[in-house]
Length: 458
Image 1: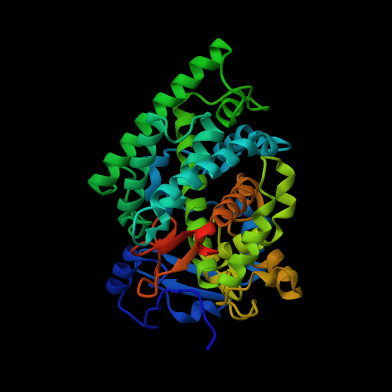
Image 2: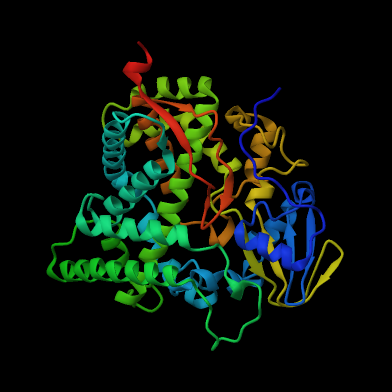
């Protein structure tokens, strides 16, 4: 019998609207029917809105790459994230989004990855030391906590040049973890066409955590702006972004705008990396032959030279396979700005267009062995074709994640560093169930037995 990675259950083909909304609020993955894994387009109608899920590569390309201005981000999804993200680049559209990207993108271009690599290496080494302290204690370890800590450390070191052990960084990390656990991916405003003046009914805990995070980020941002003015600021990502002027207007981000952007850097950079790394470690624990190959490849990690990344090919393929099976952002929602006709269906203005990496990455008509773990697929013709047409963990087109290259260095590096020092083993009675919160996480965490490599070999 073929061993398959965990996959959430699917709902019955037909359920009542009330039942569907309840399932959707709990977890958008298990709320969907099985047919979405083979459909090119699926239509959903409610009394309040209409939505279609687009899986056909031509439709995905049309919406994300060819005509993105005609399919702006849906504000229904933005409602649930507004308390934390404000008017960040993740939520804006049109001219506001274009201005934000003109200021942000230069920080991630050219040689900046090479410049930030030493900070990533330091964060990876720190993760090894923290895990070594935990391994000394008996029992399995909750791996999502480990990867969340490591990913947050990368963000703090590359963005503000401080390790997570810094008092302010630790407070932001703690509050962000609370926010992630309290915030459903969608709130009531995603389902009902509420007027702008009406309250959005965010949970009290969600509002409190968001306010605390923004207060802490505001203090860090204001302190950095003071250091920039004094000429003593380090040359990190925060300084680069704060000192970059919009080439069209000459204006820079003010403190409030920068707080919005830092908040999304934490969400996009910390949450997504933590999710992908945790699933990576579970997958290599399930398939120890791949873990052994990655551990051998990781022997090259002897000093922080960016050139080592060209040698971590297996690690990159395993990380990419984890992103395929467990894309951190499982669904993206766009909206028709005018009437459209897609696959012989007439869609009115305001129709929600759902692009689902979760279903696209496991589509039975596109992928060979779609639910299987096979990092070698990326060297096959099917894998190469799907990489171009059906693999979008960082979105695609104009709105592709500006930190995609950053993530593809950070993930394989930390994965390799951990596997160089530890062996990870599954806990048979604790199989993780994927659910969608802000990102794809495990319902009750990912628990693994962790053994130091020198012990595992004896």
